[in-house]
Image 1 (spheres, helix red, strand yellow):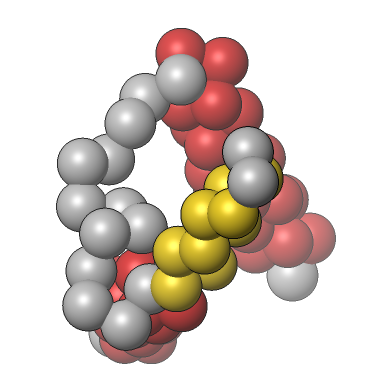
Image 2 (cartoon, rainbow, N blue to C red; image 1 turned 180 degrees about the horizontal axis):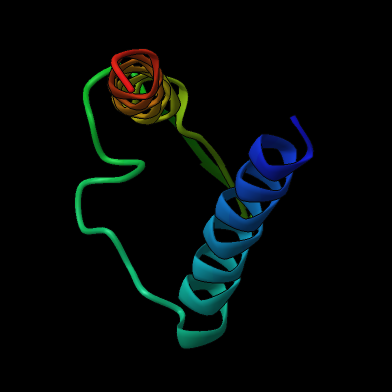
Amino acid sequence: MSVRIGTILIVVGLGLALVGLLFVLRVRIPWFGRLPGDIHIERDGTHVSIPLVSCLVVSLVLSAIATLIALLARKR
């Protein structure tokens, strides 16, 4: 049981490190925030961006990946 928890913690840690690296390198995803349904407001020098649909797409992709990993882990 403790080996399984350790493996999960390592995977989560590596995922967080990858996300942190993307932030440090300032990697831009060209479509993120520009899909239909994303909200952009510009007024008097203020810019507000609310990427609703982009976040939904990212959530669906991450959920699909997590489901596949869970299915593969059960088969072992």
